Image (cartoon, rainbow, N blue to C red; front, side, top):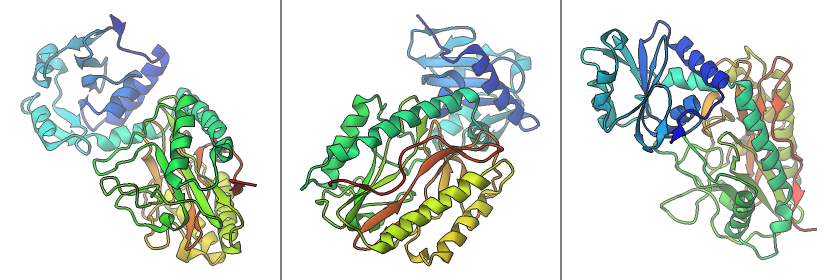
Length: 391
């Protein structure tokens, strides 16, 4: 048998109390079943349901794997069994469900567990809780950032003249896995799909994608229309690398740009503009800063440089320049023009102001930061200038 809880006791209690503080005045209990939320609460993924009361101890209702045990672990076959394991005074009058994540069928089934209870959507509550990282979580992300940077430092050694973008991506993915990358890019949202990352060369960076990523690419097949296209990397082109940084269950998000031969001054100027935006963000992304105001300050820098037509895409523009990151790659807060979110100490944010230069490719840097009172601290410490692939 194996203990269900893998988090240190003090860390597990801290996370539980954060969730329960968010529940105050909203609901009496939450039924959690999403993998990311289960992992946040326990340090592992299991098939089943967690019942989190607004006060008191959670119950872990496990369907699989069958070898788990521990305090308040109950083995069940179906969610309908949950209510029978709670005393009448423990059953909620208002229950929260992850309605923005689970299917309609799941929701309808879970609604019937506590007959007569009012049902609310607890998705935002859980996302907000997870958006402010504990010191334990930040250390996990920092460790991923170190490994991520090590892999990126070796990318030029993987390149050979005549390589396609896809061939280079496979080499980067292989190196990442050998160095301990878990390979999973956990993404929230049913219409969001990705493999281990994105390598974009030349005009493929300008190919629109249906997914809500900063950069697109047509991909290798219509079934996954994003990323490398299989075209040869040619002189005068950039190669933008944005690959998986999940080494600990908590990931960093990092983009660096490489080039084959000389590239136009316009591309170099746009890349420097991206770095300027990062410097602004590192100064001003502090607690109580407005996400929308940071977006507007970045846009001002772009407009002053005369680069707006290329900003966040050329043919198709992304509507954000930054996003929370942690267990999932698209967490809160979001740095976007209509965001109402206010930054908090401990937010971990990937900032990615990027440009697409027709005929050359994508340029710009993405770094992962943790928000601190003295400014945003970078967790992806790798060279930011454009790096030659072949001398």
